[in-house]
Image (cartoon, rainbow, N blue to C red; front, side, top):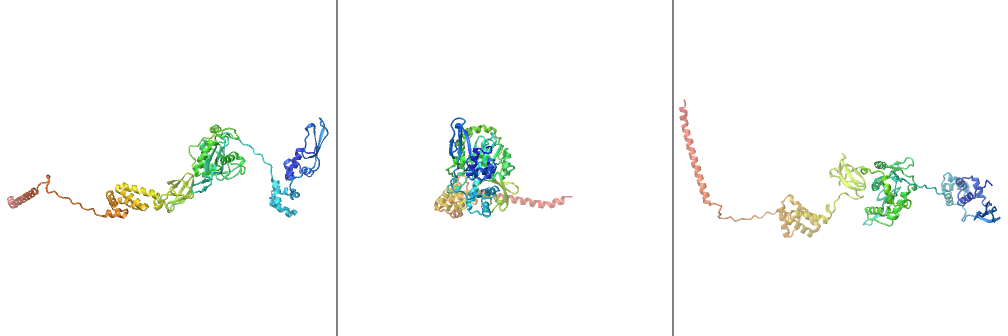
Length: 547
């Protein structure tokens, strides 16, 4: 019986047939002819004889009878296989059309198309659900082998995102977070950081933080085909995001994306993300993103790095110390990654970036500016690409600077204290008056105190301080009261004159001095006139004397 299959192969044919496999598929999987499969499937009720020797007899649980010819060596034991017990449950009405269904499924038709063809071509009477169940059984595949991958030190790092713990602020607002996990494939050293977005900028910054925390860069990055890393997935020639490609050139790394829908290609980080979710974050709620990341850093240092890994059977921290020297050296500076776009400066001198608002110089209102932003800061440039403003990155809906109630830059109570202190600089009475006005009128007194402080532009501090002193005496706490007191004329003070003083001479002496001076002047004038008359009379004589 050289043409009889081995018992194990016969049992495999019957077992797969009982599971709902078609004859074509069984023949293809086991490597036998389809007619051979058909003979064993349809002749399952026939007896198949096989023999064993001695005490090594094999007893088939499906045998209806077992006859033994003897127990000594060389004696043959014959096992007669009876009728196979049918599989429990209702038999599918699709079995009579099994070959047809199998052919159509192998051609790539869906269960819906198979059902329509059976109804049209063969007059099928059963429901679509029965065809769908039958097709599902045909499409059931045996699990494919998964190969284990182990990397040399510093050779690979695997990267993946996972859902993080929620953030609930003081107002009860719940925010979803994501955790980016980076795992070195050799030592299983990990880095985890929670973020609010999965864009390219955030991805690169967290990846850079991971590399800096490791103290070096791996040779390759095994990433998923997320949009922040891969623009077009392809096993042979994938299109890497230009920013990620530039980032890898900055640190001397290479990107090797895994095949889509094959998480086993990066199983270390897949398991690592699950480890973070189950061990570090499960059942926890945080008040801020900073609190969540601080918790992850403590957990990495005290739990993840101290554990004995189930595969390597080594402590993660100790194994990482052996891998650290094999990492690529870090670049001198951080990777300059930013997004650039033009914005119009609004009437309020603000520009909008990612739903947040940043102040520009007022002289640029109504004009275009260039904006560069990353995860940390926002820079504004004029048309000549000169930086005109620098701001810290804000959350959506926030303003870099705004005024509060009443148009003040600080809260109401803080504004009131500020202007009371400003009034105290002008003088003691001004400070006392400002404090009294604030106590009596509350926030209403802020503008009155501001007006009094600005009176220094037209009046001296002494005058303002004196007016405040009078206002305190009168109990006036208004700005108009101070200005009215400043407009009043100052009363003239009369002083008494002394009748005599040792340093002052008698008035008679001054009278005699004046009289004597006048007489001397008269005498001098008379003498001058006489001399002039003499010179006039002598003039003809001098003329006559001349030859």
